[in-house]
Amino acid sequence: MLSERQRLILNAIVDDYIRSAEPVGSRSISKRGDVAYSPATIRNEMSDLEELGYLEQPHTSAGRIPSHKGYRYYVDHLIRVKEMSKQEIDRLKLFFAERMQQQEKAIRQVAMILAEMTSYTSFVLEPELVHTTLKHMQIIPLNEKQAVVIIVTSTGHVENKLIALPRDVSVSEIEKVVNILNAKLAGVAMMHLNSKIYDEVGEEIRRYVTHYQELIKVLDTTFTLEEEGRVFLSGAANMMNQPEFRDVEKVKSLYSLLEEHDTLVKLLSPTEMGVQVRIGSENNFMAINNCSLITATYSIDGHTLGTIGILGPTRMEYGKVIGLMQYLSREMSNILSNHYGND
Image 1 (cartoon, rainbow, N blue to C red):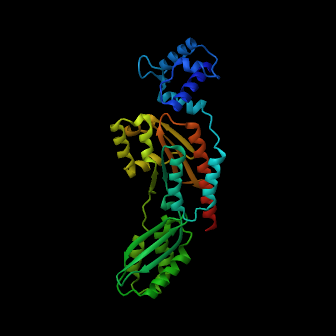
Image 2: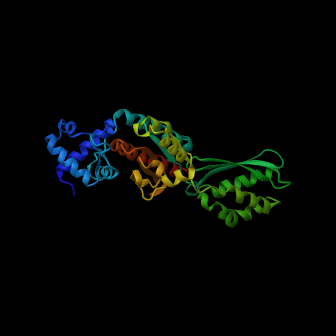
Image 3: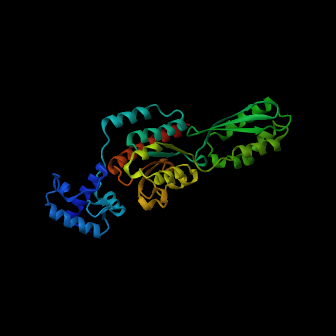
């Protein structure tokens, strides 16, 4: 356990380093109004904190910077989550007041707003399709052989698929099938659509369609959707403005990681609900060893739908970002729950 004096000094060093990106010396700490200790006393405590692994000294004559362990202690024990400004809250309220009529478009915009408000890189992992329900579907014939199937889910996701039509299926037959599917399957979880087609809807479709088996096979393929949601990213170039990423090799590694969809899904897939903070090597990817990732889930009725995330240097404004993530997580959950419940 750290003493109260060590906690105060560590807190001051983290705050100063987040603001300046420069190593912090004992003299600058002693000039702070909230630290009533001499430079000599502060130097001794800084040496002890370094020995305990909470601080690092990048150069012999320089001051100290927080280590990953130091940031972790700061986040777990010292941080004060900052309240959002009225201007920030008003901006987000205006955004959510539009009711996100097209959820997918809104989710992309959340990533953009996060990047603008934090000057870091933001991500939004959209709701996994298998955990949403069917809202509406349509089949539009293009010619005698092909049609486009349009599937709209409860979260506003729109999926378009080109299908091959069974031979000699008429437009009137297709219309009957669409009416049956919308009547019987609206509100059914996407992950259960295929079984519902075979178990409950199939017999009714058989009455109206001559080539029943061929059409059922086409619908089976149509309702087989990817389990993983897509990742929307914004503000990748923001990392280049951070002093920590002036090294070209670091930037290359980071950009390579940001282009790997499967890796981003793994990074953003939540292990638990709520806000999580992963610092440096806790992210388990070398390319972001000098970064912190703060994620928050959004959910419906306690079921996690997706994740929002902020990636920045370990010298991140944790209090500000955590407060912002808590607000966005709560508002996205509320909006989606209201929309979900009204379908």
